[in-house]
Length: 319
Image (cartoon, rainbow, N blue to C red; front, side):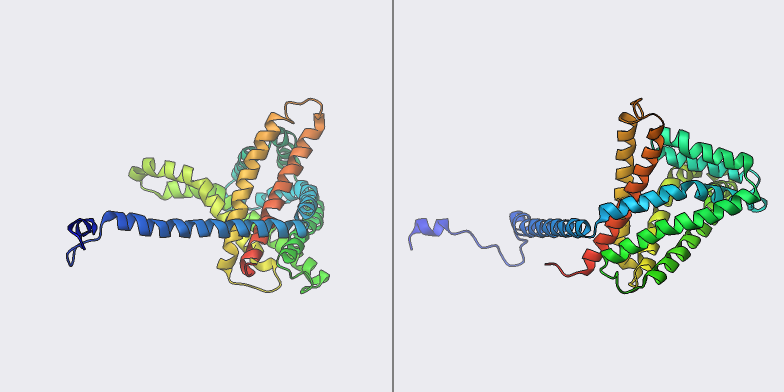
């Protein structure tokens, strides 16, 4: 070997020396990039399988059915919720009903078109507060149970279809489960809504006066993220209880998170579209508010059922 060939050979690092930086950035960087690319491919395959199976399970039609029954039960549900909360005034104070009304309207304004809030939700709540009585509550309760359990039954059936367990549970047991879930959701709403309304005031009142200026913005801005976490937990509970074969709770969490993200994004996009198109188009007239409410309930049902389809695909082996 010539002297020139010797000079072309790279010098070996001495024992104990750290490898060159390009080895870390090159080899390990390539491995990291390959892993990320593989995860992206797996995510793409999972998304395609989920969409294909959702289309096969007629998720669009089932979402429309659930949205219709939910719209039909919206008025009696609000009547029952607000009227039943009125019986809790000795515990939460005399202003709890008005506070719940304002919070419901504030939440509706974040996702619904202004016309839907102004012409559908607000008049119902105002009428209940002014003219609510025992007879109205009783009739509204029966109607809410029928229409609400029908909407919940659609959710239960669609979730069992997504998991491929439609034939595991009979139709009678499925409807009984939907009825029990709706009763549980109704009781949870009656208790949870006043607590969510009163809890920020309780926290601030129980805080020392010196810490209130720093805690008040945290409570105000942390209210909605906390509410999103609570709703995600309720979705996990729905997925867990709707399937005939129970699974571990954490295995239903991915679909619940995706469903919540889809619901938030879809609601904001729908609100923007309705505000830009339907609200400013006089041709729709009085149909704008019901159409906006129905579309919002459709987006809600679609997000919930797509989350169930995702959970079902995560349980199935990759093809």
